[in-house]
Every structure is written in C-alpha cells, then in structure tokens.
Amino acid sequence: MDQNDSTKRMLAAADRVDNLDMRVRDIEIGMAQHDAQCEERWKTTFNRLMDIEEGIKRMENRLVMGAGSMILFLAGVIVTLLMK
Image (cartoon, rainbow, N blue to C red):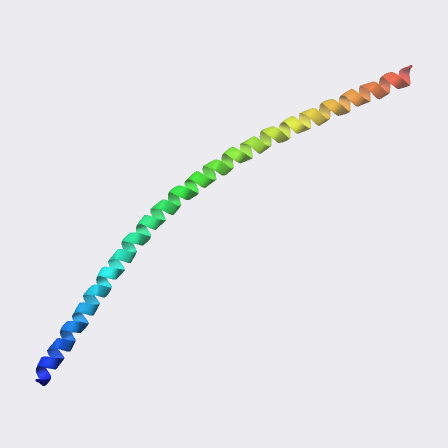
C-alpha cells in the first residue's frame, strides 16, 4: 500500500510538471506573438511620428518665410515714410 501511494504521488507530480511545461510553452508562444505585434505597432508609430515631424518642419518654414516677408514689408513702409 505504501508503494502504491508513493507511485500515485510520483505520477501526480509528473502530471503537474507536464502541465507546467505546457503552460510555459503557451506563455512563450503568447509572448512571441506579443513581441511581433508590438514591433509592428512601434514601426507604425515611428513612421507616423516622422510624418508629423515633416509636417511641423514645413509649417515652421512657412511661418519663418511669412515673418521674414512681413518684416521686409514693414521695413520698406518705414523707409518710404522716412524718405518723404
């Protein structure tokens, strides 16, 4: 009877180890899928950020050109008024 109980305990422990191995494999597969999805999301995010940055640079260039034009126009008006 004692040998039978120890055999049952060993089989139960082996089942727990097998279940644990299966759970670890499932977690590893899930993590690999998660890593692949996150990598794709980061690529998309970086591409969108680069597009946004380019748009901001274009707007900044237009603003600088507009401000420069305004300064030259106002300087021309002041010079014209002073010459009269």
